[in-house]
Image (cartoon, rainbow, N blue to C red):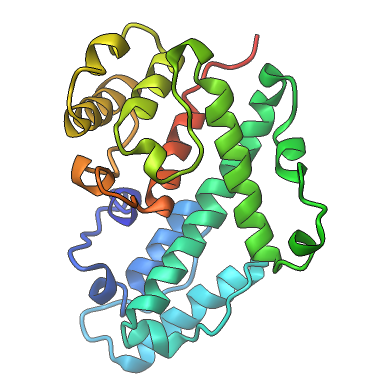
Length: 248
């Protein structure tokens, strides 16, 4: 995902943790996602103080967007602490990608007889939900809205039941069904049901990229496991929202 976003400007990411330490690529990523220009310390002779300055700039920018950062400081990024860096990257993806796509859900909402905002709020008034932190509420809201979109986008006759952003996608049929819902005749759902999980996944990812322009963020071996990574699948599926036919 980060590699894809940084293809313009052309910045190479070989090791996510190490390559983000000096802060220059982190700021470049934020610039690409936000469309805003950010100050950056750059050059061939950058030292730790410059790294910390860049990391601070990135964190301050995120805070200005009202993104709550818990137990994250600039030295964690510069020192390359994997849990912190990976958590921050997911927070950035959540804010700029998935939450942005809930607006696309709203524009498609009346196709399904309801808005994305109503989907997000459905069942969200229980005591337990009210006690959730704002960022957790946002994450769950985006997740519910996207899951509802998937459920409604796939025709019932396809016989595909999607309950989550994990095991439901393992066999590849859900990906193929969404592709077919967006543009028919790109895949043969009946014939593909005889294929292996990985063959279906490979076909889905290839067709989505070649025919729909959806960047391949996953490989079959990432998904054909007992517990696929939910965040990765959500990020990938979010790309399909903008390819769904506009309501007429």
